[in-house]
Image 1 (cartoon, one colour):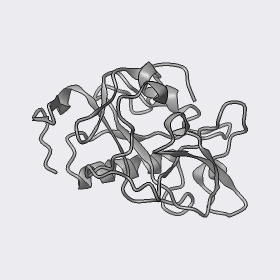
Image 2 (cartoon, rainbow, N blue to C red):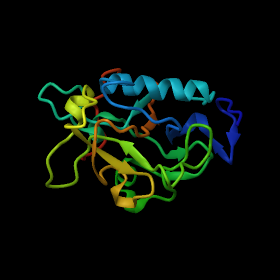
Image 3 (cartoon, one colour):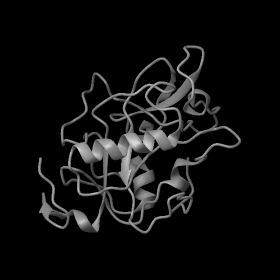
Image 4 (cartoon, rainbow, N blue to C red):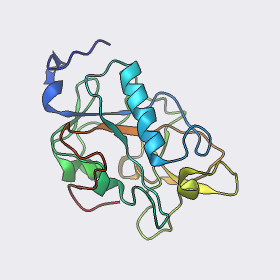
Length: 196
């Protein structure tokens, strides 16, 4: 798939929207990444490898440690415009509808190359706990031990897209990646709504 900034693909002017994808590759905490910033870098690399027209990407993840670099995914991943999958289908028109999968137009189930994620391998590391349940983030993403756990979402999960269940940190899963506005601060933290 060829992408050019400012060129309409699938009827969408990619220079005017935010893009999102699920990494086609899977990653293990404590091995492939040991922080949320390193997960962001995996998103950046995936976007670059696919020649996507955006260069600033963030992983939709959070940590639970007191000094976690990102304690709330919703507050630290900036959504200021409509969000589309890379194939040109609208996921959500704004931040509130993006964070509420019940309002999605299209599931976030497409990888950076435009292919659907297999239903046999739909899990995505997030660290976002289901309401009322304890946090779990593989030791703030530093642990790959089978005695540690992290929350994972499901690309087919609808409202469970962020928090289907906890999984052992020895496992490998995908990452959710969202492009960030050029004027968003590097440390983000300028959230666009309450959330996980």
